[in-house]
Image (cartoon, rainbow, N blue to C red; front, side, top):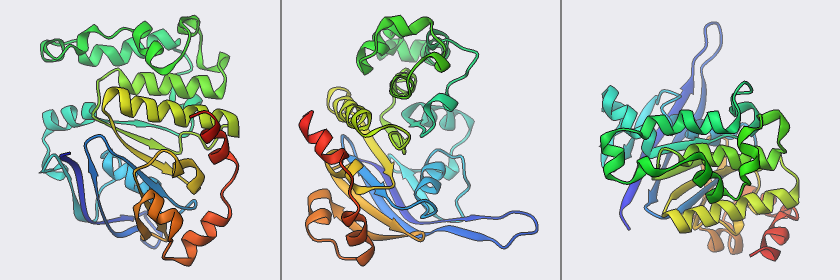
Length: 266
């Protein structure tokens, strides 16, 4: 497997007028291989969502570098940034809020599909996607196409968010707390969907979560984050079986029932 992301000594500091600078990420390094799912886990404020924002070019990097397919994203021009944002898509925690409330699901998907309706996309077969085919991929009925986000359940909105992200044919999905607002049984179904998408579409996934149960049955490797640094890094089973930090052991002690729900649906 080739390496898609290589992140080296990443630092991210928030600077606001009149406030002391806050270093949210304090020098972390990791890689993401093609076809791999990497989990980044930690409590609120640990810095994990800041990493996601940096990967999506939504937050400037203070030190270090983010390489995508061997190229430093900091050096991308406008055209390279546009291509990068098609290759790397994000799914947000607040699925309802991330969808335009004035658009039906059909309109939201059509808007995303317009980004790939060009000659280059058609040569790769991406121009053949339709709202109907995208909903089929994420397990939603066509009946939701003419509904607004407010008319759907939280789980349905999250599936629609995945469909919108997939519209541009990404190579990587960055999923930032995609199930934290859902109940346990719906969490399990969304996590199974994520696993199916990775397998069927050969996606690479960075899954960000605040509890280890969410990543236990989904991720190949896990980075446990605490106060801007990685407390544990390694293959998922190894981190669960032999955590090296007290922080990771505390997280494991608080694992909820979603792991059992997920296992029952495998």
